[in-house]
Structure formats: structure tokens, C-alpha cells
Image 1 (cartoon, helix red, strand yellow):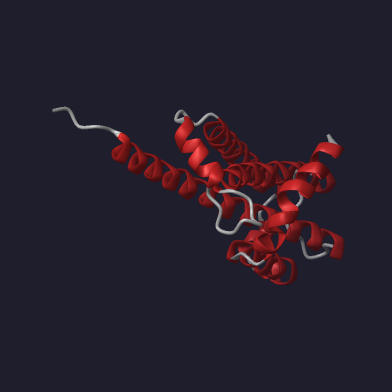
Image 2: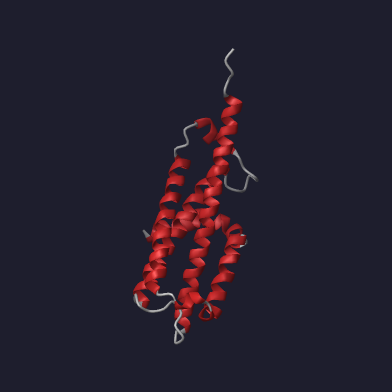
Length: 187
């Protein structure tokens, strides 16, 4: 499993690294995570119980994870071979991955981020216990960092889910347009 994750990161995420870290959703996620990590005790969120927050995150992430896997499956089994070939041959620049590769990456990356969010929520729950507040007054720097990381993953995952949803809609629109140009009208 570890080898497969590193291979995926090396082959799929590395070529898109700058695009990922320069994206507005990545930057927004970092800013919100830092803000909660630093000033989170002043928010009402700090008094929430870990069990409530992690339960909500696990529920959301599991549903979104399933959606992303479904989107990836749809991308893999596009019903029109010509449309799939069109996407596979479409490049913004020749040194960049094809539109088809990017489509599959959008769904697989969103699924991976949601999986990480699930793992992080379980780890925070196991580390903190169910009755502890998210950011109690006596929380250590490590606890602040862990909650900040969970906030980063959660916000980033939600943004990636929105991107996956919009992407699915855009692919549907492209597919409909392609069908409209290839169908013949009866005489």
C-alpha cells in the first residue's frame, strides 16, 4: 500500500505539484488551518467535543469519498470511445498530461484527500478521546498543530469535492455537445 501511494504521488501528483500548491483552495485551506491553530480557542468551535466534530467529518468524508470514486469510475468507463480518445489526445501543452489524465486525477486526488481526512479524524479521535474539547485552554502546541492539520485537510477536501462536482458537470456538458455534433438528423 505504501509503495502504491508513493508511486501515485510520484507519477500523478508530482507533475501537478505547483498547480496544487498554488491553487486558491490549497492556500485558503492553509490560511484557515493556521488561523484555527493560532486563534482557535477564541472561536465557539474550540468548545465543541472531539467526538462530535470527528463524527461529522467521518460522515461527510465517507460520502464524498464514495462520490469521488464514482466519478473516477465514470471517467474510466466513458461510454463513447471517440470521446475518450478526444480527451486522451487533448493537451494544453505537449509536456503536460492530457485532459483525460487530468480528469482522472481530479477524482483520484479528491478521493485521496478525503481518505486522508478520514484517517486524520480517526487519529485525532484516538489521540484526544471522545469527551475532550477540540481546543481546550490547556491544549499543547502539538494538539493545536493536529487540529490545524485536520482543519487544513477538511477544508481542502471540501474544496476538492466542489471541484470534482463542477468537473463532472463540465464533462457532462462537453459530452452532450459532442453528442449533438455527431448525431445525424433524420430526413
